[in-house]
Image: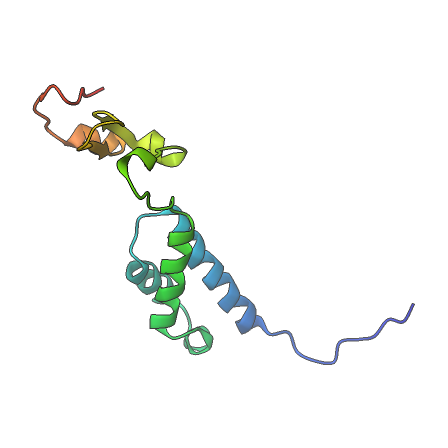
Length: 127
């Protein structure tokens, strides 16, 4: 076994850039923040060395859009193909009829639902 010593410096700035990119992609796939917001709030506190090595803002935002799109369900071609499962189903509070010609769907979180004032329409029952 041959052991060789490293003869170069560690690229700490490059490592930090990769950590920032990973953080932004994680936020894009797990939050509803817009790519512009994610980029702006993540990049603002960074040192100038890190900012200089990052991709251009438009490129970063495009990557965040693609990351988010990869975590969304595919667009259905018809209402009958619309299948609400996974995380989406946990946010579904009203669906009048999956077989209806005109479907009425409401997605919300429990905390947002508490903030709404709803009038009973007969279509949707508030939990």
